[in-house]
Image (tube, rainbow, N blue to C red):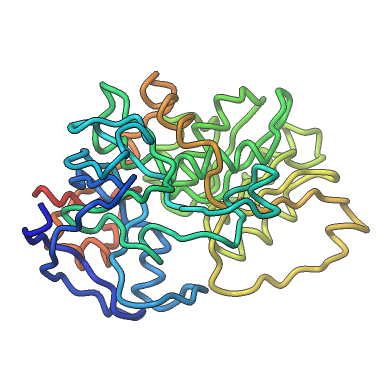
Length: 352
């Protein structure tokens, strides 16, 4: 396999420095897994790399793509026993590859360790015909009956589930999700499974609001809809929302969340932001005693995401709205929806 070549998108720098290139198909070393990439998603972080608006410092070149699913085509020495895989299995690797036993890994927070590599950033990712799952990767088999499109949605959904878990949703809660991208739409579905009193989506686009109402939201509003505050007030006797999940990556959305939640509310911040928020810190303590929780990556939630989708509890296929060939990566990466068009997750299919 290693003597053959493949197509791969290589990022040579932020700011539109991506090129489709021919590369040797990698050869798996001990414990490593070579997969044929069946689908690989485009994330807001990937667009931030293209636009040079992200907060990261990386080494170049690398192959982007941290949302992916693939079919095992070759196993390095010992990889079958280590990962429980056979040739032909469909499998997903978690994007964060961690090492050692530092403070965070000893406490189960492997997603926070400093001893980490990231597939699609510091290691080559899924925008290629083939990729390597490292020996240290946490690998999950894709259940039978789950489509490649839904399997490719696993990573953003696993993030969404982690955010919902961080929110500690209770039965009587009025839950607000801000943003209806792939993670926000996953949060809507996962939050609804917690059976709170009400799930409300805030998103500018009507098409996404309509989709969210089909996927689990009880109500949906544009950010500037005057009925939003009235609806939350009616549901809570004027107190404000109990939980606010921020998944839009817009600082204005976070600032709005501070206004619409009650005293003692829980706010989960799960976005990548391009500018700092301007807020009165008195809201956090003096006025509302808020519980502000960050959300990062997807520890222990990939298997949950796969299980919920294969059992039909969450609709991953509905969140994959556009598919492009690898050759058309630039158009897919820069794609913006037409007025009224529903665009949630755009993926690349290297088999096309």
